[in-house]
Image 1: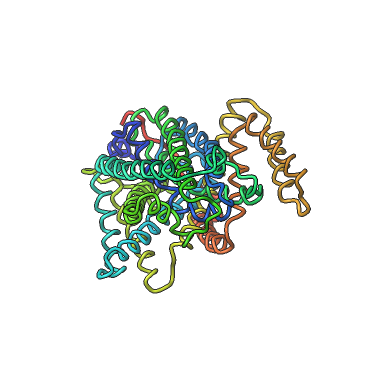
Image 2 (image 1 turned 60 degrees about the vertical axis):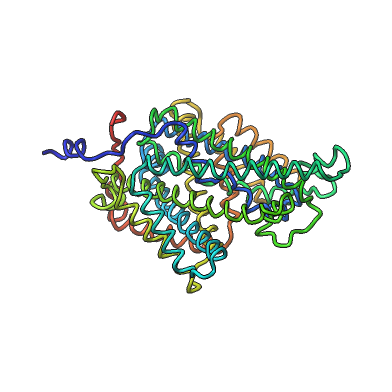
Length: 489
């Protein structure tokens, strides 16, 4: 049998996910309770303007979401950003993008195991963190090797459970708000804009954190080969997921800010939302804590799916050893080797917490490093394909605009006037070529990551580049094969 015949007869991923399944997957990975865990941090940094920062962040992420959806139309492949950048810009850059995504996707289930294990240990202190980590790592892996439709059904149940808790919170918050006196209409507008607390730099700083809370929507594109009508549904699901999460998050924090005004300090900023929920209705203090446990469970399981399929895309494309990473289980039609591999790495990292060699915070910062590299790559790939090649636009002028915005903002003596000019140029970019506006915003977010994330992320990237150089003898050979499977399989 020829290699081409073998490739056709080999097991493929099964197309079974509807638009609703894709949206549910995205909502679970991002979490419908996404703003609850960072509410206190955003409130402190943005001086109470949490709802404003989340809405601005939603607009910013929509640029990248649209780029992901448009690229998924052109390449309905499980490779995601790795494929888009490799096909449209350069195979070596596609490999580098994929390598950054490997870190992102593998850290997500790891930090979810850590968070779930720590919270479960609080609920049941008689069971050690070590045992809880083993339990959650095993459950994530077991559910994901059962098949994609099984995971989709679990996602539906998780979304329904979290949605019910959010609904109860809204009812309790409304009852509290209208059952207590307030100082007129200004009370209801302060969460958006409070002239006594507003400071533009603080709000923008908080927005950079809020944007990172949307990370996860890009995982939808890794399911392109398992989606029905991927050219339509991936774009719709990606954009709709950002809109649903953004609007829902804004409503949650708006209610929370009315229950707990910004001028009142929190007992603990890291768990601020649980105190808000407890003030609205005492039993919600424990209920919200449990809900966040469930949310991280769903997010970790969904992230493991995304990581396994990303590795499958890279393995099938020969960026990683295809004999292990490019194989699909013939019975379950899932990349079983990759599910076990990701589960094992995530569990190993989670167990390092018990000996003080890793932490949830460091993992979260490293995750952002890889995700933002991928976001920048996808935005640039969308610009090259749709604006330059198909749109016939001159690439030089918009790229000079990007350079101008970056230079103005990074100018050592930049003041309000230069920031205004940079803002005007960014608006022009958004109208003229949205992908470059998304690239520019993601660049500034990436630049503002902590030095620890830069050091660890930089080491990860250097290791990946060294592997690619070794494999291709100094990048002289073909690094990646981007052959895509037929869509009707």
